[in-house]
Amino acid sequence: MSDDLFSFSSKDTPIVSGHPTTPDEEESFFSLRPESFADYVGQKETVETLQIAIEAAKKRDEPIEHVLFHGPPGLGKTTLAHIIAKEMGGELTITSGPALEKGGDLVGLLTNLQQGDILFIDEIHRIPKAVEEFLYPAMEDFSIDIVFDKGVHARSHRFRLNRFILIGATTRIGLLSAPLRDRFGMFRTLDFYDTDDLQRIARRSAALLNTPLTPEGARALAMRSRGTPRILNRLLKRVRDYAEVRADGVLTDEVVERALALEGVDCLGLTNLDRAFLKTIIDYYRGGPVGIEAIAATLQEETDTLVDVVEPYLLKIGFLIRTSSGRKVSQDACRHLGYAVQGKLF
Ligand SMILES: Nc1ncnc2c1ncn2[C@@H]1O[C@H](COP(=O)(O)OP(=O)(O)OP(=O)(O)O)[C@@H](O)[C@H]1O
Ligand SMILES: [Mg+2]
Image (cartoon, rainbow, N blue to C red):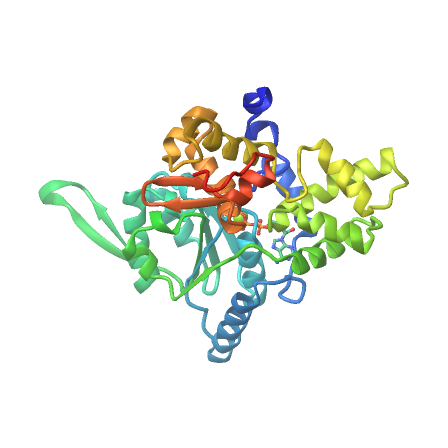
């Protein structure tokens, strides 16, 4: 086992984790965020479903139904919420499951919404149960029941809300309760982007940043972005810095490769954490199957980070296999990492 296996963690490589590390960073990406469906690359079926729903709702002069987006971080869920709000002409209020600690937090937000406004709840699977119960009547009947006093004096009062649109986003659909899931009229899973779409995003972002990018450079970036626009935009900025300091400012495939090698990003876009994850399974657990908790403990990483950020892409490219008895590494992954694969190793 290599010595460097434990010398890093996802905290050392924020550049490639799917989540924005700071609000400022998210802010600085704001200009790269597409503001209309025309600029939103890929996810064709989701875009079409939404466009149809929006056009139909506008004809009837009513808001669209509640929408639930599911998918790994950085694929464009928040971006879609912004675009929907713009198309529908409503105000967008953004919150997240963990930020809604008490029922009162949600009631405050709901009662401030006007007809056609949008409430976006990120990480909706992390909403506390007590708060979730306020959401049911709010979503279904546009009303909330508030109970005053306790015991025999308890009285319930029903408040009417304006007809709003709830947009929920989650990285873990399995953790969402069935009653909540069923109250969304539309449910879309966002998938990883293919290289063509990522190249398109690279060209668009490079143009917005005024950075020269060759077609080969765009392809090299796309291949290293783990199917994720947010990662692509981050890597693009790192490569731009490198090109301006160590090259002539033009983002060619060679410059992309050199710059990203420095960041620990390999030709498939795998990061130090991805490789450490796979190597742990191979070196400590003979390739698996092994439970995620055991991997997390060995790597000293959060289980959630591994499940939300690391695993989805490794599963997608077939480097990781999930079985009923745990995670297994594939032979392709072993080959990529330079392990000898003899016959049936695992
Ligand atoms: N379809 C797209 N076309 C072009 N750029 C995109 C697209 N989707 C996302 N992006 C870019 O990627 C960034 C991240 O997208 P977004 O914040 O919407 O991801 P998310 O799915 O909400 O992630 P999280 O789960 O971490 O909240 C955006 O700021 C935008 O620049
Ligand atoms: Mg988001």
